[in-house]
Length: 212
Image (tube, rainbow, N blue to C red; front, side, top):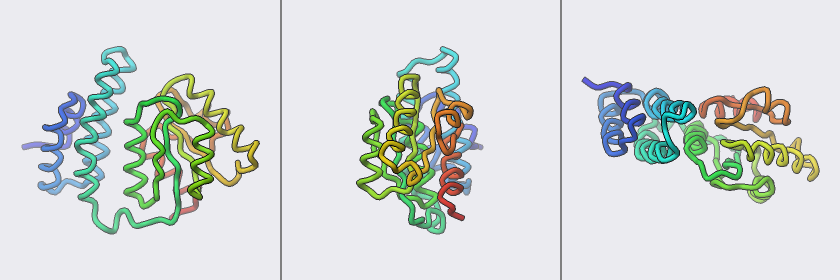
């Protein structure tokens, strides 16, 4: 007999083919898609992240974990009932500041999309100006930023200042998350919300954009 814990282990061990097969098996067995995503894929990624933070894993392990997650996520997305993912008329610009790291950002994108938001994923290695420019160009309602290493923290502060300088700070709620961030730091730097986990982005978006 298999379980979601088995999927978590496969993601933690960065085995994409086996993880994808396990994802299908869990869905066929009737496990809930959200439970598979959160308790299997996301928990497995967290395990790798924790090992990396404790110097028991290397960057390549993070990359492999991301590849493993990507093998599972489309399978899970396709399994959500039509009622979930009901469209919400709100656009969110999402990207990683400076870094090319995208595991957390991609999970946030998945969860926001499932929740019904229109996600404008601008990818990695973004500057403050790019967040602002894309928000203006697309008519976004919110900006979500992934900050995964220290130099990007300063750039996040620059983004908040840029929005103020361009007189659009009130127009765009800004949320942030990432390995090097904390709630206290986010508040101090002017963020409207901070998330410790990818799923927090959905809660914050609904709260700040007043979506039921």
